[in-house]
View 1 (tube, rainbow over the protein chains, first blue to last red):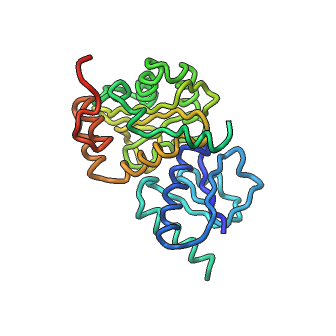
View 2 (cartoon, rainbow over the protein chains, first blue to last red):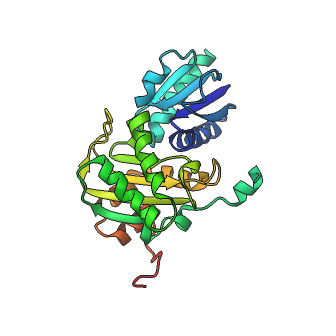
View 3 (cartoon, rainbow over the protein chains, first blue to last red):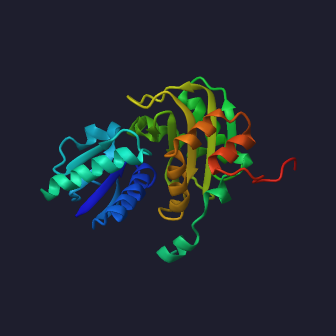
Length: 92
Length: 167
């Protein structure tokens, strides 16, 4: 499974999300690859799940991946609940 | 420079966030002024070229206010090639919060800026920042700090004299 985090430049916000998600996957012993993307380069790339700040929803309207939108990017509880839900929905 | 060199050069938050790079309770009337003040801290210490701060503001205007990463907290940056001279982080709090145009997380009273020289070496410091900001007690202390020294201590979550004073 590939989980991509998205932000405008690919190494601030999306990197922060990537680090939190890697912690969650480690805790839950889930095997998945987490990559961080920027808006310029994400088109044409494939991921099972894309995690992005809620303000970026409009950039992901045509995405075929499962999209997870996060309001508070430092809220580990929000990130954990939403990302695990998305992973579960893909496994069902 | 290869990847392992980059990793070896990674820097801690303590190394780059000093008394010169924080300012408590700044007075601003707009997000642009807040970005200017947090950016000037980096320009004045010769960590970034002035154009870096311009690019930081352009990025926000172009890509959107998602840089308001949490209620009241904005994390500003541009790209390494936009004029970063040294890895750096600066932090200000605002006496009166201002809007950045975010639908949920406005208004903002904590503004952090960082400059990275590549995609790797800032990761440990960024992780520390993210971990600190995820602790509401630490964020409360950051908000209530009235002096630069208290602000630095709150952010680093230390009660020692992190920097000798008065020189």
